[in-house]
Structure formats: structure tokens, C-alpha cells
Image (cartoon, rainbow, N blue to C red; front, side, top):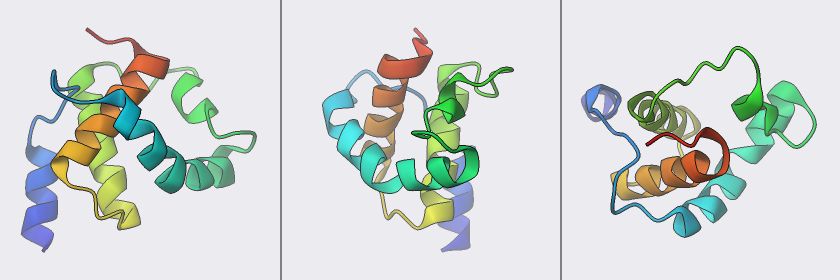
Length: 96
């Protein structure tokens, strides 16, 4: 299991062309928001809008989503992670 988690972190997961942000939003809302609110308060969106920005490209965004998925035990498949990254990119990051 640990090897699988490490492979997920090492793969260059980014905002993929076939990813669907509409499928990513409910996954994000269910799994991510409570943790971000606990860490930063408010509605949790400061995780994405804070300065300096810690995520600076699509690959880093995909890797961060995969890491959070593993840390929280979300049980997401790679396509779920890609959908969440696509929603975050569409909503906050705007990477090409």
C-alpha cells in the first residue's frame, strides 16, 4: 500500500484534459473543506488564495491533490484526483 501511495506522489499528475471539474467539486466539498476550515478558518478557501501561493503550476496542483487524498484516506481513484484538481484549477488557479 505504501508503494502505491509513493507512486501516486511521484507520478506527474496534473490538470488533465479529460478531467471533469463538475465531478471534482462534490468530492472536494465532501473530503477537503472540513480540513481546510479546521486549518485556516472561514470557508477554507484561503488554502487556495493565500499569499505566497504554494502551488504554482498544474503538476504541483495534481501532486498536492494526490497527497491530500492519501493523507485523508479519501479512497479516490486517479480520475477522482484529476477531477478535483480540474475543479480547483477552474475555480482558483487558472493554470493552462
